[in-house]
Image (cartoon, rainbow, N blue to C red; front, side):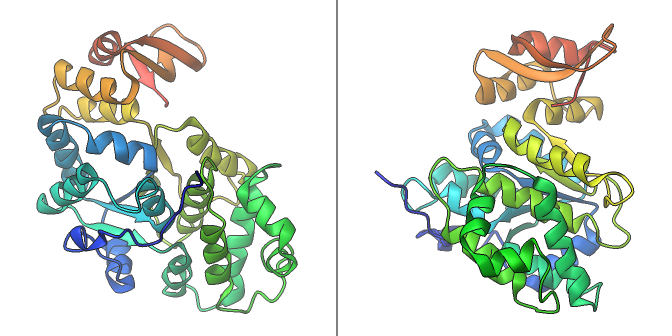
Length: 312
């Protein structure tokens, strides 16, 4: 049975008190919040299933980091993909974040144009950022490539850079992508990668301001591929990619009230009994991309000085 996606979950009213879609408030958050965390679908699902103590650790970390949470429209579609509604645990997680003072925004991807328009008056330049971000994905098989190959007009606008003085290119592109969303594709991750990459070029953006939380190696690879293809001389501010294990280690290193038992519980929700990470152990000279061990063993390595540096 084909999955039907909706841009606005049927029970959106249950989270509307906790989130904002207003571009003015989004612009304000980008200006004043020290960190912006974009959630991928899988990690949001995992974190919404944490127990109360572990969720409190997360919210305390977000508060201490002066962070806002951004959910793109496509990710919201994926969260509601099974029934057209957001599950109760997702609604509860939105409520918990909001009640703990963390601002949450649902971002229509095309509004990135409006965000950049606050800094750049040149529409050509704003549209060039979109073209560059899409080109740098450079994937032979993807929903985006298929869409562009089947839509001559969009191909000319996005890839060839034609008519870049238009103010509607972002809208046409992202709405077309969401309409093409299918079960099992990587569209949410591809769009996240494009959005974060473009926002990293806002003037004055500090390295590490924009962060992606994902436990999907493919999603992490999307962002990494763009960064590598772009090259340091043309890149924006540096982006941080957090898997749940990397986030757990970050929180532990801040001595932010996380115990060994908390870490084991958080890791087990994501991985079950066996955790897979990429990182450097004490005597490694290069990154091991396939470290596999029990959640309890990883927790002990995190607590051990120089035990492990988790990359993903």
